[in-house]
Length: 603
Image (cartoon, helix red, strand yellow):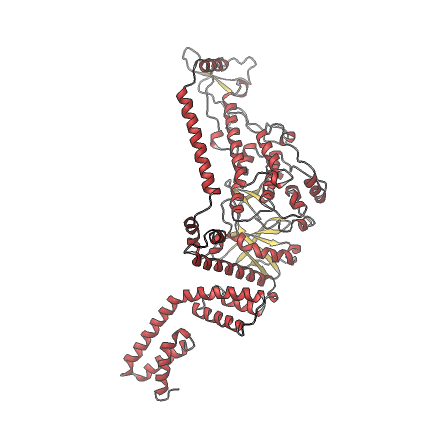
């Protein structure tokens, strides 16, 4: 039975079900924060291998913060129920939209592809592969944002998932190398992206088999069809890009999400230009025509579709020309082409693709084309204009090449890496890649000692996060040392000085004798030493404040000694009781003990 509350979240209605489990709408009653809570399916929750491997990567997934990625917020276990909380996105997956009858235009397909590339470029740059990119894991929110969900989770164990009941659509978008059990790479995600673009453009995956196993076999052995063989009016440029992404060998695909985004941006420009050309060449039979007589009289409007001869029926006012469909034409199961006079701005299209209102003069349609042709034939190209254009192109290419080199290819200087690392000193896990690069490339830099401390801190944080997650899965797997380490590194309100003292005692106890230690013990003690140093540093302001407080109380006792010695003795004794076991307070407390011992009735 599913509890009504998991962790801090009250569960509300079910949002969806899938191979990994069931998703609920959740709310934190204290903060009002709304989240999506996914409860893992029983077969996954009982898969020790899945849980152990997932815990190794959960912190990295939580650190993924990008506007096109659904953020993972937390992961936990309660009453044998495993769950994780995610950012709540109000909207539908692309798969759900298609299943409900929605047909994506080619412009929409390209724009979605661009947003997916932004998310992939970000995650790939920090070493995270999605592994399960498909329309069901891409959400379009109610305000039009594109979000990638289940990042790096669902595809950890793809081969096992293929046997699970209720898992649909995974095999169709799996790369050939994943289908034969090889590790997923950046190119694996790009293959899946090609499958997603194909499915959005045609309404079905590029390769489908009778069963998941048959589909996997075809993914490995069968070449995907060319886009225009399935959707006759699809842009050939988009088909060529998809064909490149669906190559069987990873090395034959594009190398990065950024490269794919560049191609998609070019295709978007081509589609935009074609849309404008179609708008400018709109036929009279497809629009309302405004007749503007040559004598300057008021224009009249006719509907060419309602008059067989096309002659005008007089009317006052102005007509509106609307642009033709730029994507697929209306047909069975597709959105109809709006009629004349309707606004032709399709959902998801950019504002630049919406045609402006135009007035078309009767009998001038072809005459205007002739005049434009004659004008172009009489105009001689300007040498200086051509030269300026050429120079501009060269400058643009030079700037673009420099930016690509500067942002992608050029090794970062020590100062540039330090600028990225320094602000993250409290959370160094997010810049661990930059830290490793710094240590590898600049071993003689004066900041290396500080960088090494940050690396040790990041690794200690990762160690503790993995240990804490392991504890939620099965606490019996933890040694007594690991349990004590978790206790004294918990983010509670305990004194930092007390924490570092307990950790020091823990380290001293296990290192006593100098005998070689097991790797597991050594790793825990190394992390404990990092936390101890961190707490000791944080305890300095705390100790200073308490030392000042002790001094004030001692001074108060001295002032009372002459008038109320009994109360003065009580103050001294209270200080001994409170701080007598604190190492840092010994210089203050020992003199008080000696004085109390000499007092009448003292101990």
